[in-house]
Length: 154
Length: 385
Image 1 (cartoon, each protein chain N blue to C red):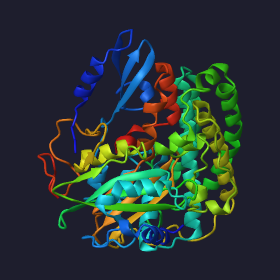
Image 2: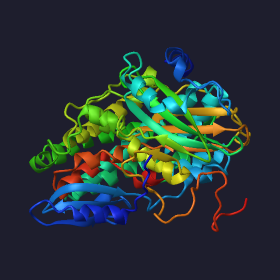
Image 3: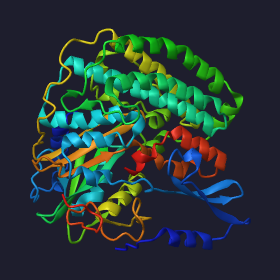
């Protein structure tokens, strides 16, 4: 199914979950309210119409001017072969979100990667520590305001 | 709200304190230089005798920050970084980025380009699988397959070298086309190769598949049931071995895959044998695809845009995914309308396939872990990026 149609289907079925007043205007994706986020993910995985049984990807985007992080969840359904991107907006000064480990097991490691590179904190994550960088690394490299002594000026 | 950041030392210390088994447990490092980890991957194993109780993968030994570099280079330059990730499907990686850009710009390519791309993607799949087959034999302790695998890959490498000029980090596919047109004797040599490899695959089967030791070491070892495989985010041959027919070549039908006949091979149990056998069968399917395409490559240009045109994607999110030799490679771009991507992310198949071993290998022996790692077909530069 084409993503925009699927997006409309989700947005109409789960109207109360969708966030309308996002600071970053992105048309083609579903943005979910932070307060209802893990509940929505559980619902949409078990929903007979969508059956998103694979969490294909999870990453983040740092919007430093708007002072938010966008958390990107890429869902795939192996039975219907459709996919959608679900976004959650978290404030940059308090980047805390619930973990999805108990819904998809791969989330545990994908969230560790995002924690390592962006510093997003996941509530109730069983093993939140750095995955690529050293344990004593200072800062989160994929944030837009990251600086260290080894970086080259362009 | 409880968020406690642990270090690896703390975890090992905590695990060490819980001595409730009778015999003495110990930790052992496997890697980062262990030959069966195919690169610099490190496992910390908690063992009781030779039985694995817990397995902790440790990554980052070849982390180069490709996503961070990607934010300061143009889209065209980023294409050349992707073949440093999964170097055995480098042309398919190039295609993934190109496809994302072409979708975002609504760029139409012609049939010749798509056919050439499909042929080269299948060439990459075959050379990746022959290479994997050789390494698999060596992991199990047989040296002969390693040389056979390299010998058969060499043939293909020289064909690709003739077209695109490099032997390992093959840059070929670009947004809007392919870098060079195919050479005049490409079709002849590819046909020779198809004739050459078909009997070789039978030989592979005689040498490894029919071997009782190999069968005993792979059957019912490292079983990954389909629900677990989905939950662990596995894709590619690993997921198909568990019986889920998810193959983007069929389900998404990019390139000219909708014009050729081939079957998606699936396994039944999801054990190491299924993962082994699927790749052998996929080589045959890839040969079939190339054979159907190579005689009717349409005429046309090999590039629809100029190589020097600057690429600026519209503001917003763009993504597309593609089936590499190891699973789904997704490219996610957040664009702010400039020449460089605001954020570019690779969903690498190996990173996501790797984690199922933390479940699969528990309760087995170290030698079984070697088999499992080998049948997952990991490329560590793609895990670490």
